[in-house]
Length: 63
Image 1 (spheres, rainbow, N blue to C red):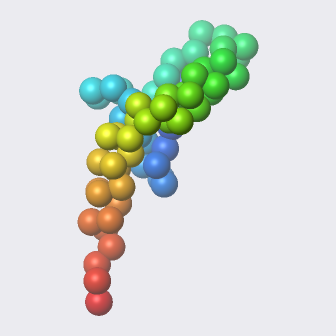
Image 2: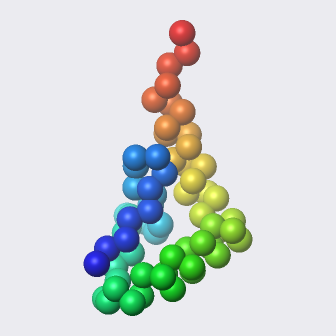
């Protein structure tokens, strides 16, 4: 099973060239989500989110 974290509709790059977390069994899903939540709360994904946010903003044109 693969878990993809998205910012809007785009996958968030969690590590260089990697956008998914591979899980061997379904039982790993909840602990993985809890670890991911802790990483977000600790600010460990702020840089990746900022990159995606900037890319998303470029898609909007001021009129």
